[in-house]
Image (cartoon, rainbow, N blue to C red; front, side, top):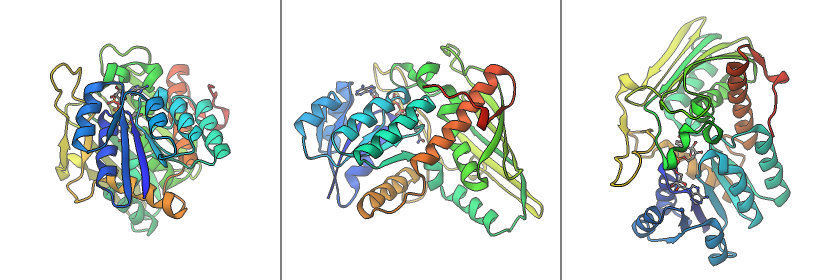
Length: 340
Ligand SMILES: NC(=O)c1ccc[n+]([C@@H]2O[C@H](COP(=O)([O-])OP(=O)(O)OC[C@H]3O[C@@H](n4cnc5c(N)ncnc54)[C@H](O)[C@@H]3O)[C@@H](O)[C@H]2O)c1
């Protein structure tokens, strides 16, 4: 039996907690949030214990936590991943791994030193349509791919304390959202050499307009060019891709396929309706598949489909894009400035 604690119960934490509560061989030992209403509601619903802080949970459940799932705002990942490693737990951390590259490397080194496994929720690797497209390309069905286009867009994510609007907390839509596409593209086409990015709204500073739009061009070492578009100015969440090879094209649009898209309705007194996350019509959601996979890796020692190093590399691309916007020039990953 693997005993799990979930920290942060917003959009992602409530998804993780529900998934763990339903898993065989897993016991949801408790849920943590500084918002008492969220804790009480979820603890009651999932028949588990609720805590106001990680420290309170760690003390009450001393010696009874094998895995901590960190679903806090991005700028708090580093602190809580290290606290989880300090109590000897393995860690599942939501993406992006951290706000800055320096702290991401420190988290990885810290977990290694403490003997804690670290998994990062790059969930696109568990979406069947993306996995299928990768397999089709690997089978050579469209020939050598030269150009890739991806799009990911939706409404501005209004979450606790409006933290997505604070660039220092979230990194804007490039670090927060289209990092999903950077990770998928790197998984499919290998390492990136150079990044050029432009944004038309938001991204830096306090985002009062609560809109963000960016276009990022990636040149891969293999020669592939990718155009990655991201928007927090659309009404409905949707994703699309197009991979053009010498012998054909693979394309997909979630808008055309009409998958189920949910937006959490704001409860009375709550600032927001949360982040839109795509919900698959399949029996098992990609989030559930991802968490089952991580649990399997924890129990069997298997190497995960996505490693912490992959999560670091996806951050490298995202932060090079932010640097490119700031400096108005292409940024080579080798010459990238690394913030602590
Ligand atoms: N994989 C995905 O598709 C996906 C989707 C959305 C968000 N995310 C990531 O998940 C993470 C969480 O995002 P979210 O949208 O769920 O945020 P959220 O604001 O909805 O939830 C965060 C929760 O943490 C609580 N909290 C904050 N600081 C705390 C602390 N120190 N102790 C206890 N509780 C605290 C808040 O009260 C809030 O309920 C972010 O890193 C985000 O980038 C991933």
